[in-house]
Image (cartoon, rainbow, N blue to C red; front, side, top):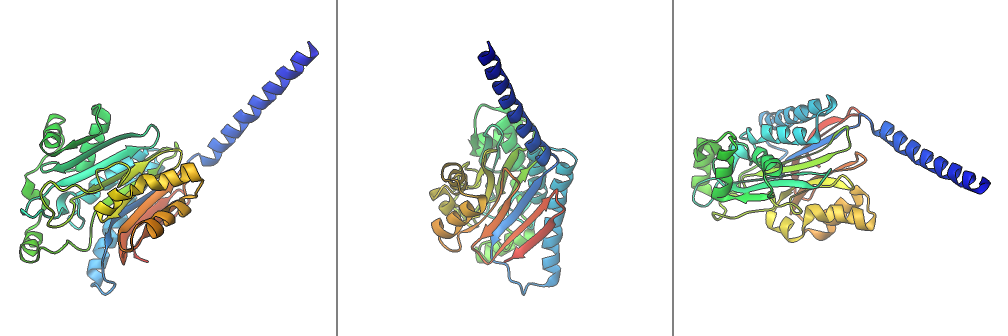
Length: 324
């Protein structure tokens, strides 16, 4: 009887200790949040007019402030990522939504994806032509259907069925952008694909990416942005990632998931995993990534000359940058 009582006491003390550690960990992380965003990686000269630089910095700061307010008021990482990307999609400076680039036919085909790290739920759309905010439709794919990815006409029709805002395809370009494309067929510069990753106060990570694709792309071409594992990934056990750059390379090397896998299976830190993939797996100039791990560490790494980016944390950090 004495032995049984001793065993019971030991078991009770063990579970009390475990409960205490879990509670202590929750208290330490309570109220902590982090959000990072990007507006694309590519070339943007430091010699650009100050007026142009200021416009980009102002846009990044406004987008970042939207996400920060949501998170500090107890909002979910899902809402923060969607709303930040909505803002960037509505901003013609970036290659997503309103500022999307042109296909070789002079039209627009948009892609987006979102992933929730708590349960690995995902939603994505590719090649949509009338959806004003593709990231919002991607979220509805995740929440309202049993599927992950809708493409082309089917994705547009789903948007109509779910009553998301729709526009004429010409909405996505400005006359100035169209004339530039018509005469040069050159890649749109400097703003490119947009993305956001957030860790909320509840420990949930969400990642999202939205793009108009590559300038002068063949109709039907799809890059990494709507592809979970390539351009977007989130798992509460490891990290969340959003990528920007040459989509074909990010698909080929499964970039977003590879970073998570290095952390999960090899014990890499977020910094080690991001640097391994960006500097040793991908070729120089491939693009960039933003990422947050489960502890609130963040990385914003790129191998191009510039990447529009920003970070805000519950510790008071609030900054936007373009160059290294």
